[in-house]
Image (tube, rainbow, N blue to C red; front, side, top):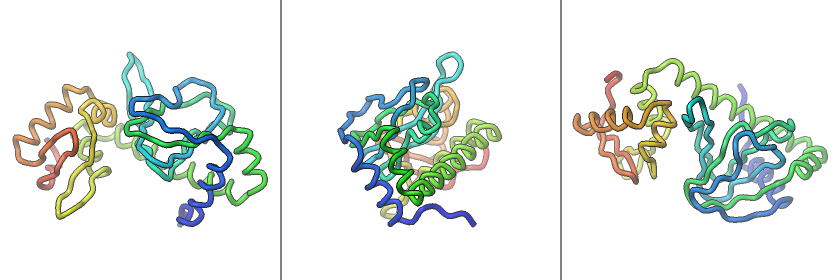
Length: 211
């Protein structure tokens, strides 16, 4: 059975990376890296939330995943390729930027940390594979239910999807139009299944398997 790095290993990995780079704060709405740009560095997330998106045909945007503290992004710069996605700040974030040269020196000196990076990449690929598989196999409603299941948390006896999560972001996550998402959310609210606001989407009862 494949397992990821332990908490102690992750903390050491992030610490070693962060001490080599420059740390700064990014405001909501800022773009940290842009799809198609040269990949020359990676980032460590200390605080805040970001999202990774790709641009498709006709300017359509698809959100791949949400990035949070304790994660890194930009690892593919080690291959010398262009950025495969755009990463944008959704809540005020503190990030450390580490150049490719510094990362390569660290990994050469610490093979154990190189292995941790490989494990992180494997976990990222698996998550993206699940996302793409779900997009390909389910209808829009099924993808919406899958998204809610993946993001939902429980607190104080209440199950909800934390925000901010606009209808546009939901549409980008499930590969649908904003109008379609709006219609589904309104139908679910009228049916007494959810209570939606920008701050959160409360899941009042189990969502039906089909709509």
